[in-house]
Each structure stands twice: as structure tokens, then as C-alpha cells.
Length: 390
Image 1: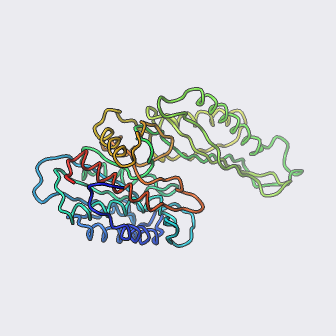
Image 2: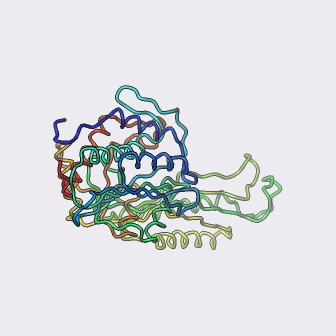
Image 3: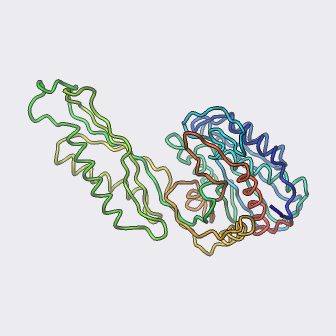
């Protein structure tokens, strides 16, 4: 790859990725990984690295880099999360051009990329106007994390920027919209203890029969959603991933549970989808006489940015320069923290990072050449958007 960029130290990038991935902090307690990443940001050359514990035991790092005497220019955020999913994995190792380990792809590799970007700019004394802000958050991966620390940061008013890049979620397209997502647990209960089938009074509410009725209603609602696609994003939907009830083949259970996810359009609100499902469950409860409760939690709202935003054009030019491909504008059904920057901080935000196809896989890895390309794209993006002189 021939560029005018300063030479990347790939051994350093690999080492950073491995060191970060060795710490398997999950949302709920990310203090250890925050200590290491703060140290690495300071060593890389960030002039100001602040740690805020907006959510107890889950630090949020804000690192800043600018020229000593910059004229007024653009401020751009690069964002990544430090927590990993609650899935086990063998210890990180490097083999055949790949770094293996939980979090290498999602998204310690991206965090390592930004360390190298700052090192290259700092050591080469590259000139640019404006400011780079790196925000590393802790409460990303559900079920324990749902962006709470970034939402708290938005309310604090500590950060303002002209644009942001969430360093995951896209490699071969430019995301300008995403669906929102909310998880739900529906619990169906009847009075009394579990009982033998033959000694259960006639007319007793059967939680499994009620569960079947709830699933039928949700499938009907899902069919309606599939007939109403959201422009540029795809279909909102219901998905049921877990159903459970009963302990023994002839014992009448007193409880049944359904777990799933509701995806909804950028123009819909969490309150609207919560009311929709609540109405369905109330109808079934009235029909069957069962007690039905709903525990629904927002993961992230959806969002949409204008396709003519300057950061969109800058990213597309940058990818064209490095990867030699024209990335299309796209809407996504997956969830990233971009929605918080767009909806709560009013910052136009794009997503870009190394190929994330191995995220949440049983065996997770990131390709080393993907990290190299990503670093070049981030440098090119800084040139396109802030005037970084390479």
C-alpha cells in the first residue's frame, strides 16, 4: 500500500491489541481496562486524558489531541467501547496474519488503531487545525450495557464536536441510518404452585397455552411489520429467541417466559413500541385471565443523518483513496453507539472500523491487514475533514 503517510509500526499495533484483549472486562465493571487504555492514550501523545465515572465502576475516558496553537478548525470524535460480550474465549494469540481473542475484533483492534493514529501524528509533528477527541466508553454490550455512560456524558455537556466516527459497524459501506432495538421478557403466571396434571383443578390457567397465544399475536404483529419497510433501512421486526416453561412432562407449571427483541425504525420511539407490545399483552390477559408482565429495555434508539453531511463525503473519499472502492450509503439493522451521538448530542456520526464479521463469534479474530487499512483510512479522513497535512 503506497501512501504518503508516516510508517505504521504494526508490531506496536499488534501488541496493543493483544494487551487490551487480555483484559476481559464486561459491562458492569470495566475499571481494569480503563486503567490500561488511559495509560496507552497518554503514552501515545494525547495532551489531556480525563476519566469520568458517570456510571459506578464503569469509567468513560475522554482524550484530546490538538496542535499546541491551533487556529479554529473542526473537532472530530473517534469513539470505541472497552467492554466485551459475556462469551468465553481462549487467551489472545497471533497466527497467520490474524489476532485471535475475545474483543480483538469487537473492538480492541479499533482502539489500538487510534493509539497508532495519535502516535503517528504526534511523532511526525503533522499539522492540522482543530481537535481530535477519543471517547472510550464502558457500557456498550448488552445485556448489562445499553449506552448508559454515553447518555450520561451527553447530559453533562462535557463534549462538543462537529462530527463523530464510531469505530465499528461498517467497513464496506457508509452507514447513515440504523434501526432501534429493545429487548423484552414476557412472564406469564397463574396463582398457586406447580401441580400434578391430574390434581390440578379444571379451568386452571395453563401458562403454556397462554404463551402460545402470545407468540401467535407477536407473529401477527411481526407479519404487519414486514409489510411496512423503513426507507433505506429494512424492516422493523419482532424476534423470539427463547421460550421456556415447566419442569416435568405431567406437572402443570405456574409460569412461562418468552424472551426476544423488537427492532424499530429511526422515526419510532421506544415509548411507542413499548405501548404497542403492552397493548397486545393486555388483550391476551383479558382473554385468558392470566397475569402477564412485560420487562422491556431499550438497547438503543434508531437514528438517521442527512446523506449530504460533510463527514459522510469525507469518509467515502477516504475509503476510495485507501481501499479503491466506492462505498454505498446504507441503513443498518444492527445497533451501535452512533445513535447516542446523533440523537442525544446532535453530532452527525458515521461508522467505520476493521472488518467486524467475526464479532460475537465462537472464535473471534481481527486481520492485521485490516488494522493497517483502518489506520490509513482514519489518517486520510483526518486529512479530508480537518485538513491534516500528510
